[in-house]
Amino acid sequence: MSYLQTLDTVVTTIVLPAAPATDRDAVFPRAAIDALGQAGLLGLVSSKDVGGMGLGLPEAAQLIERLAKACPSTAMIVCMHLCAATVLEKFAGETVRRDVAGGRHLSTLAWSDSGSRSHFWAPVGTARQEGDHIVIDGSKSMVTAAGEADSYVWSTAPVALAGASTLWLVDSKSAGLSEPKAFDGMGLRGNRSSPLSATGVRVAPAAMLGVDGGGFDIMIGAVLPVFSTLIASSSLGQMDAVLEAACAHAAGSKLEHLGSSLAELPTIRAYLARARIQADMVRTLRDDTLAALAANRPDAMLRVMQVKAAAAEAALEVTDSAMRVCGGAAFRKDVGIERYFRDARAASVMAPTSDVLFDFIGKAVCGMPVFG
Image (cartoon, rainbow, N blue to C red):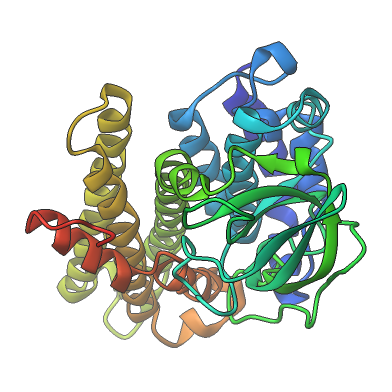
């Protein structure tokens, strides 16, 4: 059985049926995450040498796209896990890698500091040597799967060397970690994207991922391509879901006094046509981003920046069009539009935000240093 067949079974039997309650009750989709782990899908990008599937970013993009079509909250959790797993696969010890590969260890990124916000590459939290341990202090503004993940790939300022940041593997049960307030958001309500604080959290020096001061290179070189492509894939899944729901509503709803369906109105078809074009353009860009990364093309990083911004902004417009097409009915939860409308708001304000990416892209096309 292929990984997509396995995924489809988990989606249809567990993820999709639980999605409305996940959103309504703002509950972490534990059953879905456990099922994905047991199916080996949380080890998708882990090496076969440690028991993982040994697959790559194209397969991860398909995984997230299909999950997001069913439950964007679940897709967000898995997206952040795969980003963290990318780091752990490169720098963590074998025991952790085997647990990730076997679906027994859920991880996530803890990068956006309360002090530097969406400028995730510049943490203001600290790490200092104290005897045989490293002591971490700082606060993160939003951490997906906060309190639910087994570990955090946590960023701080360097301990001693120059550089923008250093990354650490932090056990989520570490003394000194706290969740100041629970997540209760407008969208992605099940992803538990809460703030976290670290007060005197002690880790071993071996918990360092990479080298001191080398966090920026890992963030931008290894993780950003994965994160941007997977978030864009999540936006794609959400767009497909709302378009299917909007088209079904337009075809099935009648103007009885005219004896016609909503789909027979040219204005309705035009909204749906434009929305379909937007979604398909994003898919083309996402697939070209994958191709650029695979071929190590000179424009690969430009595509990485473009795809997240393009997908996030398109999702805003496509879900808005679906709301317009379905009118007042779209406000009802049973039509299946309003949840995706709310969930789609997140990608554009998720670091790096669309506005930050537009600035980066503008610098790149003008021949300026992106982070200068």
